[in-house]
Image (cartoon, rainbow, N blue to C red):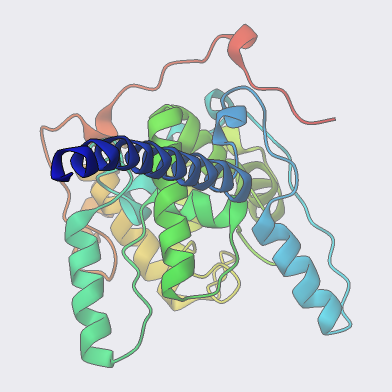
Length: 288
């Protein structure tokens, strides 16, 4: 009798195992399906420029709630049509390890986490350009663990899908540079009356200096913070050989200590990589 019972139990266990594996497979498939429904398809950004970003819409909603009108200014330009000084200045100011990391700067995140523990507030910080691009394209400025998890997942996908040059090109075209001003071209024309391609090293340093909070720190020369930070960014560019300063500029150069500007690395590829033109046929197309 016992042998018969054992024989009956074996098919039942096998059937239960098959059902369990099937259910697990369905759950995993559903999980992946939900993931791709909830999270954006970043592969489109390889050849297509984004339209209005999530952050632009957030700013417009913010103004409407206050009864104000806002006209969003943005003009898309390829990376090769921007001043090399601007690219270098922004990388120095915002993400000095951009060419080396895979979307996250562990050292900067650790420092930001320690500051959060000291203050007792969830602010994080230490964002790379890849993370900032994610926030601009897809998220709102809300600060909570769920949003940070979304940011991390999308950033990881951006880094795996797009080239570094494309990530930088996207960032420089969508980042906020004043009220209603988005992207390098609109910022250059608004603040200096010229194209992004024509920006000098000093002008590029000023634009980069305002990036932590471009609506608070003005580029037009009325902000001491921007003036001081721009001088430090410019001095780093000079030491790296990006610009050749005049003798008077060297004598008057300020000390290098400044919040959020990393210590420069010499004799590294990093920001000294030559910028290659993207073939015209490979340039992404603006959405119609």
